[in-house]
Length: 299
Image (cartoon, rainbow, N blue to C red; front, side, top):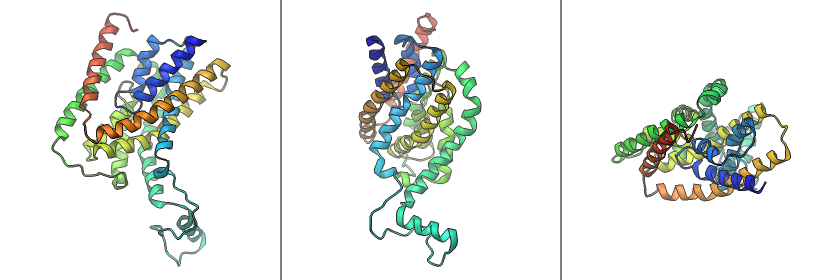
């Protein structure tokens, strides 16, 4: 049991670090599962690798709560919503008065844009989920995607070096931007790609600054990863053994704590540096995994 606890803590640390850095958390978990075998069923491990991300989601909620929570109850005269019209009556008028009194409409609009970004993943991810689990979750695919996106990071950062970003604040992301970022996020369904890596690359390509692309990636992770976790839990069922429940809870707690530090580190880092170091890391790691796979160490 002690060995299982240690392995779970290590996997939680791996998740907390790799979820937000553009180096593929799922890819790393697949690789580390070959080293830190939990000794549990394949179905549980597959579910664990996804649901452990819930702890990382909560780190975003805690850090960015004030920027994301759309309700207020303060007794003051808030700025009127963009829908305000004192002559409006009926249900529309009641909604308008409720919005004026209790809602931050800029945050509501942000959440609506995040919902737009989630749509491509729903349309593509749900139908292909079982097929990807069966055919893509292996070290060979992970290594190829690590190398491919590592090269892309270096090429895109070199291309982006002299460009001025079109969007430097999350609030200035357009509906079209939100949809395009959602389409880029679908690329991350292939393990080894990195959800944050795909959306950050996509954001930079369409004109977002690094910090804006990273922040929006964090926000987008909340519904995306929550949905993926619920889907995996639904497929696995609620028939956990006490050990399985303890392992899953511990993994989530560890990934939450580690994610708090990693998110803050990444935001400070990219204010002064680009993502090329992560590109080189991906290439080196991908090559190592490919060599180990060919040698039969990973199978």
